[in-house]
Length: 373
Ligand SMILES: NC(=O)C1=CN([C@@H]2O[C@H](COP(=O)(O)OP(=O)(O)OC[C@H]3O[C@@H](n4cnc5c(N)ncnc54)[C@H](OP(=O)(O)O)[C@@H]3O)[C@@H](O)[C@H]2O)C=CC1
Ligand SMILES: CC(C)=CCC[C@@H](C)[C@H]1CC[C@H]2C3=C(CC[C@]12C)[C@@]1(C)CCC(=O)[C@@H](C)[C@@H]1CC3
Image 1 (cartoon, protein in one colour):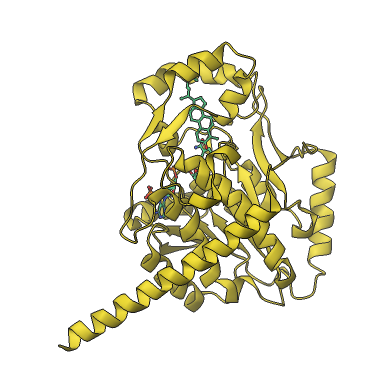
Image 2: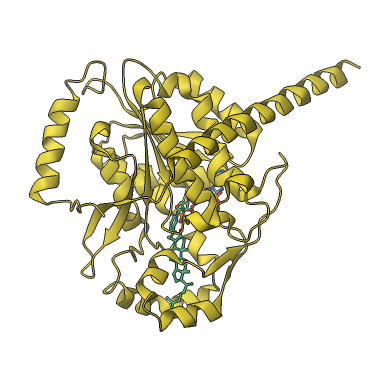
């Protein structure tokens, strides 16, 4: 476990000041006359939307792009952001990360619109049809593992996954592969010699090694696709750093803690959450992982925005934490990752990418032929 990084502490403040000074001296990197471009996937609600709000508070000159699958919700999020940041530049991008064609089209659009990407926040995620193992919950409640159970939900949650229209497992496609394909498509912007770019994954402390199998990276055969996909994103981040740091691309992962959002409200009936909200604030006294609000959950995402990429640990997951008194801070914790497996995952993802690209080309050719006859 690494040291904590509390905002407002002498450490964080002086680091942030020296960072702005030294970073602006890096050749070709951000300087005050350049507008930073930040793209956030799944930006229309929850942690993604809270992050956008926090980023605009930090830098009102940003060019912020909300990449969302539902344009009505995206438009509503944009209006909400513009209410508090009247002059902000907030763009919308249609992106369904769970669809190969949508990712390819969106990436083309990004390349046409922007000449640089400073931050790409890979935040969109799903946990479909979640089931809570009530027996395991009560067993855990009276065990020594109780704090860990509340922090990670280990052994508590299963989901029912399905195959999407690209023939991929939906959770894998949304939480991992769509984002991987997006990075690959945007490499010309993300890997530029003249500047550094950052990709930041919203992972989870529910990412467990035991839920992932390299022989079944899509998790076709298991009941914990969410945990598996998040563990895969941790491994992919490490592999990306190995392969792309020299080209100026840096990847990090965060865990927002337990946050009350559409995703968590989907786990249990809403009346249950209303009943236990006071209990959840009580639990916060014993575990700092109950961040509860999207604003608090976005702490580590925001903190990373202020850090120099070279100062970050590629093997760390950055956790948003909230103390019993409601103070937010970010803490790096070491991830349990095998370098070989992360390398194998990276090459398997490259293979899958070439397969799906082949399918897209076939379909486009067939469509063209059909339209001629
Ligand atoms: N809440 C929590 O306690 C925790 C959340 N996380 C992670 O945080 C991230 C954000 O989730 P959270 O804010 O909690 O939940 P929300 O459901 O509020 O946000 C998820 C966002 O992802 C979007 N999204 C889902 N599928 C797609 C898709 N195929 N293409 C594009 N966008 C999509 C949603 O859009 P739409 O509105 O259209 O559904 C929504 O904007 C997720 O990756 C989640 O796994 C991690 C740990 C804990
Ligand atoms: C609080 C009480 C009395 C009951 C709630 C029990 C569970 C529903 C709850 C305990 C730990 C929670 C948890 C998550 C979901 C809800 C719980 C299982 C997450 C899995 C949500 C998404 C994530 O990615 C994790 C970081 C969360 C971990 C804790």
